[in-house]
Length: 288
Image 1 (cartoon, rainbow, N blue to C red):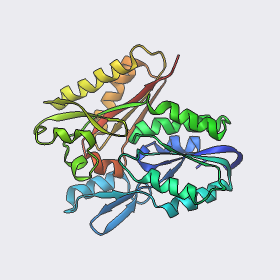
Image 2: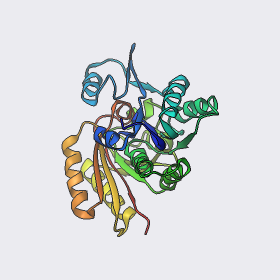
Image 3: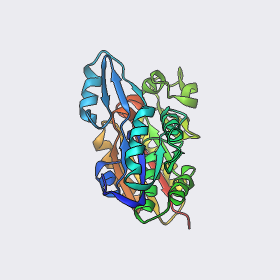
Image 4: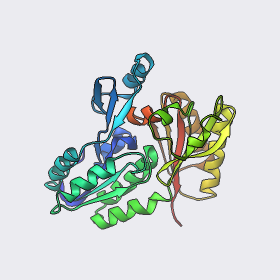
């Protein structure tokens, strides 16, 4: 992934970012695989299990999936190897509010004080995290310093928004990632909740009775969020509903004419927490 360059910074993220592989390769981003667990089997997310295989297993397996973050040792090994190839390492990772990944990476960096490593808690996940990592990687490719790459990432944390619809809260609840949306439990039967990732955790936005109206609400929220901005970056993410995601992407392209519109199929670890049928939009507007 990318060419070795001892004069530039490299961006590291984790597999919950759901960045498409062609973008990862083009920008030289290093993606740390998270761990998927079902029964007595474990896989590295995006390495030895892909979305289609996972969703078929989810359909037939008696086991509910769980996940785990990459270990301190994994990060120590990765940082040590990358430090031999690059001038600095910016690790932009899934929210500490839903994962121990930041803690693993921070401990690893503390164990390697001689290396130029900066850890960024994105307070986000999926393509909300992905858009932050992508922009930071663009800065790195353009020759920005480690401090500048980190500043680019941090400047986007409060600007990139994500709204998404899930078919059921069961996966978020059983996976322990439901956050403030827990208050919808018991009231969300036959409802299609609209959720967002804000402040590093999952937050409820609205309780909608039909999926069509829930997706319309997402569209309205995006429209309010960009509010006439000239340059908008967007990503449509989905869990095993590619046709629906494609239609949503077409509508967004027509309405907002974004300078960037990425289509992303969520990987197994994100899918394990939001469940099949989830679809959403991550976006931000460039500052004037």
